[in-house]
Image (cartoon, rainbow, N blue to C red; front, side, top):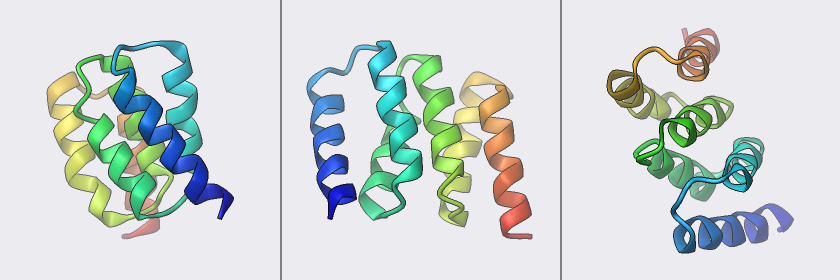
Length: 99
């Protein structure tokens, strides 16, 4: 229940304040630890963010969900930004978890 409440509040905060700041990176990292459809959806959306640092952190957090459905989002982010370390690491984690 706490995770659902936290995810809803994080989603609201990210939507109301789309500009990059360090707090968002922290919230994105939290979403990587709260596994669920809603947190996955938010992280997938954040891989489209205009700021490459946000995309990088969102990709890393999305990879921690260990869901094969994350791969297209990670590939698209990597194509857009280049092989940033967090995206490459997330893709490696998915490959290990789902050979």
